[in-house]
Amino acid sequence: MGLFDGRLNLELAYWIKDNSDVVLAAPTPPSLGVPNNSITRNIGRVHNSGIEFSISGTVIDKSNFSWNSNFNFSTQRNEVKELVDGNDIIYEYTIHREGESINSIYGYQYEGVNKANGNPIYRKADGTLVQGNITGNGGSAGVYYGYDPANPTALGAQSSLSSADKVILGTTLPKWFGGLDNNFKLGNFDANVFVRFSGGNKIMNRTRQDLLTMAFENNSTEILGRWQSAENPGDGQTPRLAAGANYGNFINTNGESSSRFVENGDFLKVSNLAVGYTLPKTITERLSIDRLRVYAQLQNAFVFTKYTGLDPETYTNLNNNNLGVDWNGQPQQRVFTVGLNLGF
Image 1 (cartoon, helix red, strand yellow):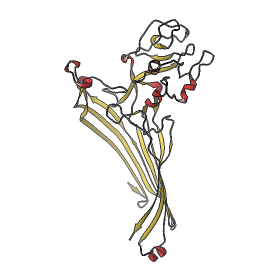
Image 2 (tube, helix red, strand yellow; image 1 turned 180 degrees about the vertical axis):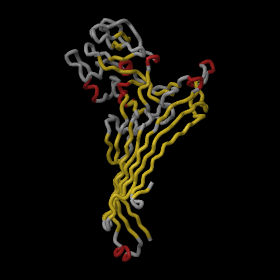
Image 3 (cartoon, rainbow, N blue to C red; image 1 turned 90 degrees about the horizontal axis):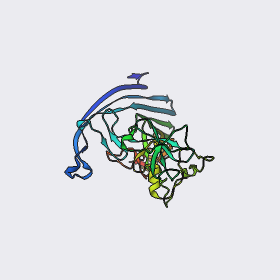
Image 4 (cartoon, one colour; image 1 turned 135 degrees about the horizontal axis):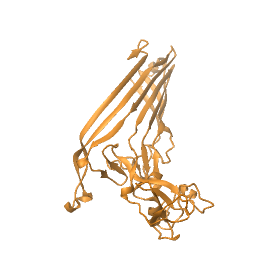
């Protein structure tokens, strides 16, 4: 829809798309001897829907200055409608489950640290709390025991934390995203500022998880917030120290998702900054050329986010199994460019 003689344009759309025969890993009986007990088949049906809105126009149009702007905003909803026999397809960190967003993060619900002894606390599927006993403390090390907030110094009955206690921890797909593109012109100068935003999704920060193994390797500064004593419980999220990689795996549930390491993927990114200058005709004619523009450009200039990883758009498991897992990935590069646009 155009307004004000075309200076302002609006567009609003609602879309629905059903994808059938989605390529997914279909479980197979272990007796068949198929690697990973699965084969790739066209087995899934996924429903997608959302809203797209855009507004563009000329904000200012003067003889020596102009400003054109374009803003767009979209939402998306994703739901798995059908899997083989309605069975979940489970991977290390994610899951395909009917009624949920495809590739949802699937793991344990972390409830912080027992301030009395530094043990990590988890919530089981039935709602009860268990603590992972790191050292002896009246029980066996590396074993789960019940946790009673009213009596934190005592170990409850021996318990467990198994795959049956895993829950959906969030979707890896953004629920909303968009951008704002601005173009300016002042005399012979021109400039562009492009900003993107996205959010509503979760990221499993496997890199952060790996940097807390407590083995003979570098640990992140997060370890400085560890529990040290009942009088000095630290940040309330980092358990006590324990020697050896096996203890590190036990404490952090390495190789599996935990809400302790699942973070919001919301971000605002300045994707492009550019400035240029076009030489006047009086100069280009003397040079026997039609047009000459010099410019400088900065891509991926800045990102504003609460995500603690290097970049909320860093996804290293780019297969259908673990999309949304950040595992030692490189951030999008910041690129500086200087160039010429030359026309004859």
